[in-house]
Each structure stands twice: as C-alpha cells, then as structure tokens.
Amino acid sequence: MNKIVKLLIPATAALFLAGCGGTQYGAANIYSIPEGAEIINLKDNSHLGVTPAKISFPGKSDTAEQITIQLQKPGYLDRITSFWINRRHDSRTDALAQPIDVKVELKKE
Image (cartoon, rainbow, N blue to C red):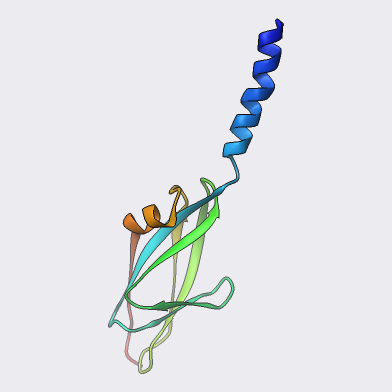
C-alpha cells in the first residue's frame, strides 16, 4: 500500500468513530382521553408530565428504544402502553418539532 492510503485508512476510521456514539434525540406527543393524566416512565418510575405532553428522549446516536409508560388519573383505570422512539435528531429542539403521536384512551373505574 502506498503511504497516502496507509494514512487515510486510520484517519477515515477515526472520523467515522467520532460520529458514532454521540447523543441524539427522539420525541413523542403523549395524549390521553380525557386529558390530565399523569405520565410515569416505567423504566425508572420517573414523572414525565401530565397529558397532553411533548417529551424528548435522549440517547445514543441512531438507536431505537421501546418506551413503556403508565398513565394515571383519579377516577380512571391506570393504563400501560409502549411505543418506539427512534433517536435520529441532533438536538432536542429538532426532535420536539417532529414528535411521534401516542394517544391513549382511559376507561372509567
């Protein structure tokens, strides 16, 4: 191999690896019928907000994750639902501008 090719291969690999593994974002608009349900992320039991809510999910570049949430509202049965988030946006703002819609209908107790 000539010297230029020997230098280009490691440089190209370094550039490729530098682009991998960074943080990217996905987002969801979470709606409930009726509105006003508390949203709990069952992965860590964290409170994500109250419906309707627009929520971003950061993570490793170009990854997808199944998110499982529980919706709770007094007078209604708790409801668990899952959806996939694809992290393909470079910023939280970009992700929130193009969220997926997640709609959940709650049933009275």
